[in-house]
Length: 412
Image 1 (cartoon, rainbow, N blue to C red):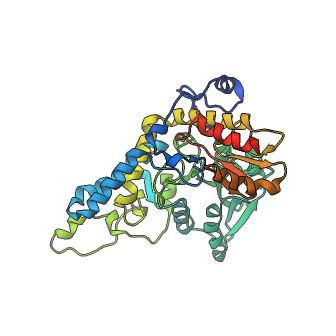
Image 2 (cartoon, rainbow, N blue to C red):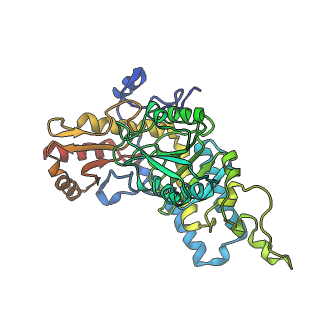
Image 3 (spheres, helix red, strand yellow):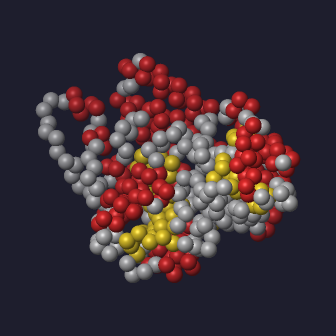
């Protein structure tokens, strides 16, 4: 199998519809044949095209959430084995998702959790520089701004497109640049970054490369052993279809070992069974920190982590490459069906920069908010972001959902 780490897909299994290149052209002639919708709820007759905001729980994950409630209703069900198995199961699924080892996965409650671990843990020096992208999601910028009190300079890149290309990044790096943080898929434009190219530039200049994958994981494949990354953070409640308040982080082992962060959670080194033993003084953990050291407190969060593990396992069972193909066919149906005389497509039409976030604007942009309300009245849930309409379909959507949205849009 040949892995294309520019697109993030295994070519032997995936011919995702970017409408570019020979294999992209072949997929454009195919119809959407898979149907995952039966694995999700009915949405009460509405059409949810807003996965970039919240991904719905699959039915199997909802069942796991109900079982977690049963455990709490009868607390004797909360055995030590279950306290241990909940985080272990989730780490195993997430490790498989990104090509890491289970003991390298840090459980969090957001993407910000991992970013703050890095911002607070890296041993900064006076005059160090952090590069971020102007217009990126706030979570990718705010943790670094706090470092300015320590003499760290935070510099905004202002690329021609929403995200920089490798040449722009290379030109922006200075002798002081210590870290570069960017999103993989841009929440406000739908542009996807060239992780391989950006990572290679960072490697060449000794710059730590941190990526927020929240708007991509679950709709795109990622292998941290192939793509030149130093850290990946992500929420779990978008394309990974988990509950809100979920997230994780992967940090390259050598970077992890260098962190200096004041965190010592007792369950990172002990179990509840240890409390039953006589005596024993409390000591700080010895040795270098591990991923387990930095887990969010309350790792047996069965209300959230149990159903999220089921969601990730479900996605893995379907196959991320297969899901990616399906999602891109939905995107292709949408961008091909929108009336160009009425709407401008502001997200990429095709190519490696196209993602599953589609942005359009009416030729008279003043009508966009009104159109958003009309869609909602018709039972179609999209997003209104920075004056534009955003549509983000995922595997639970169908070709009929896209047709319904296009019918409303093109009739306006």
